[in-house]
Image (cartoon, rainbow, N blue to C red; front, side, top):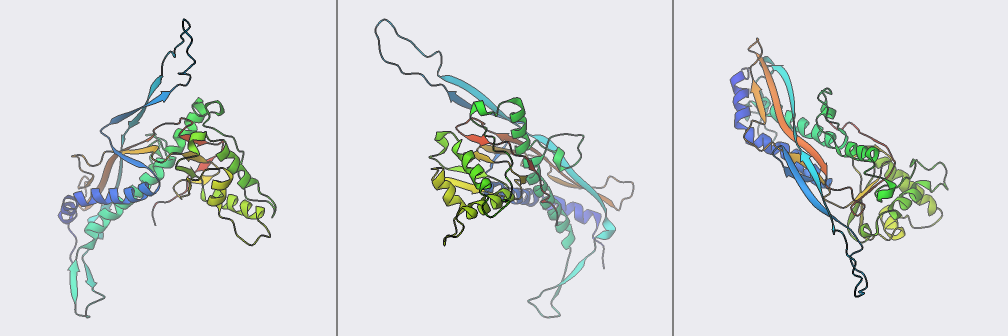
Length: 337
């Protein structure tokens, strides 16, 4: 069987460049959209401004004694900075050979010779990049000393944790509600997990209660709360639906629940308006997203290189848009096969 040549794989990288860049977006975008992220094309830095209004503007009129509000509010900025990350590996061109593929729909003699590994290796590497970006945007901390996906970008949960430490997220700001640990029911009458979720939602600003909002929780927290709710209904015919009961008990008719592997495991709760977080990327530019290079002394060794820019932003942590608790969260491995 003939070898797949160095020039063949290198040329494949050139030919598939736009498709691979699109494939990266496809892997990323479909899942990111399902998880309620915005995707922003950013060249180094983007700054979003939003206005925080004050109250106390109107008052009864009294001639000769007119008061006024010092200012209506203030603008705040939310920067989104994208930083460069890469992925690479070396492999020997001798590993890649032509494959004879027999069509399942054809006859035994209907054979065609292909070079499937040229495109496959590039596509599968690109898929891995997309999966690792998804992990990083939740749980990463940008750190060039950490040469793993976790060091590529400061993610959603780390931004929240840092804001709790700094005091930007706090009980006094109306965007923090301590619940304590949310655990599996210990007995058939234990309803604590459900009660804590209800208490959390009841602590939300009233403006969040009459519009579409998303409650994010881990898969385990969802299971614990659902089981605790069923304990409340023990002995009754109908099995309660967690979402419907939360909507009714908390008077939040437009509440939605989001659980995902990417979100992680633990008992952190996040209630927010949809579209509150941005993923910034810059891989549609002029530079080459994926390259295949000969840089080793051995001409049979190929270097596969992926490069992109990314960053994460939460547009605002204001109490009218965001609420979290004192729960912890850890990432789960979602990359590879």
